[in-house]
Length: 320
Image (cartoon, rainbow, N blue to C red; front, side, top):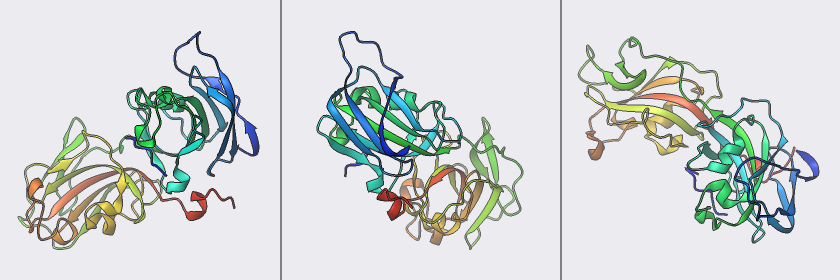
């Protein structure tokens, strides 16, 4: 099963009555064919089409309405996605098969039609879109899924969670034995080690600066975070994304101190990780980042969101 590259109900059979929600009028284009979608929120849908599917505009329908927060342009979210290509009748993508939900950032630039269709919809909703790939994904379609721009698609999105935009916390006085966070434009920009020992602690340590009230991370979590990393005693960060892009990744893909200390931390938290070499970059360090094998490193991490791998039962679309 090919996986979407992005940056990318009812138990009975439903005839999806859709309403136009985007695109420009085209008097020369005609609506043709019908699509049926069956299945409940959280289970893999079944899609059938009758006749040659043609949609002059993006058409959307909320099949199941959730009771979570409404989505806005610029939001990040996790969703299960199912993409049926009506041109060849194939399933181009099913996150129920891959076992990993997709992280999407609603944007008129990268996912124009999909983003506009999801704005205003609530977390916990199942939304069905019918349109050409061009109208959903943009001018190039989705070549990684072998979807051409003019291919007619039926896309089902189950929105499972919304990612926080920021942690409502302002940098303040440091806790005992930890560096102070230096702020620029109300965002962490560096760490100040004034008054601290020249050598960092010998043991890994997690300090909670702000405690969230969201789900707790596990060792299997895919993490969405803002972070800043700096060598103990250093003058500037070796890496940060408070001014950059969100790039979700499994906790296990980061330095080992993340896997050791972050499980149990709740979404919405700001924490500081103090990591000696054994929990950081090891005896070899990281030459490109200016980190020696003897360096202790410190991270400030804002936990904005997380997602867990689907269980085998969920991945297969089974119902309890």
